[in-house]
Image (cartoon, rainbow, N blue to C red; front, side, top):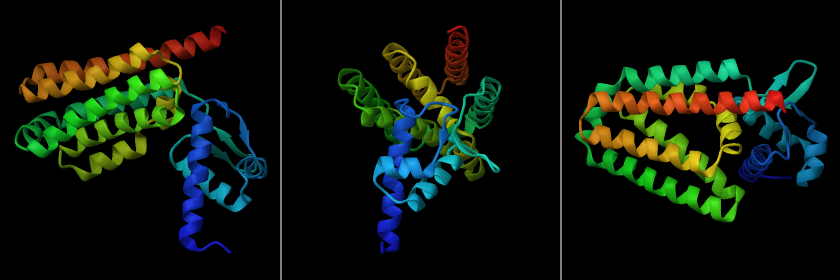
Length: 230
């Protein structure tokens, strides 16, 4: 019998495998997820698979329906846009506090710079090697950038809101469908944002935030429209 520590590690592993299968489209949006089939695929028992699926429900990558089981979450454009608009509001509301925090704390400033540099490197390596693990790293850098930005507000509840509303499935959906050039441009938008913060230019910070959110919305809208035509 597995110890608690080993059992949790197995759940982590299976969760990562399912997540990666969603990213690489081994499991498609709307596809029903059968714990028994997944257990056979990953060489595990059904129990850790069920725990992993529950975790992915909390990440909004999987949907759970009473008496119908679970499915890979299908993209909902209206919901995605609403979430990005909420993100815009969150990014702008504490803008002044965030600018002060960053410009009076070298540790925060260096963390933002390091994130952008490492993110840019991860995207370039992914483009060259097409390694799904580098792709996941690409997503994680994006998530951590925005989380760090909001942490600079000093508002714990704001950060928790971001963690709950961050559109995991939409980000995965966009990143695996958009071009390398757009992925790289998104990181450059992060770089422009922090340069504006370092320059203490509030108007440019606002412009950078709005441009970043607008581009994300435009990208996902175009992808969905093309999918409907095809």
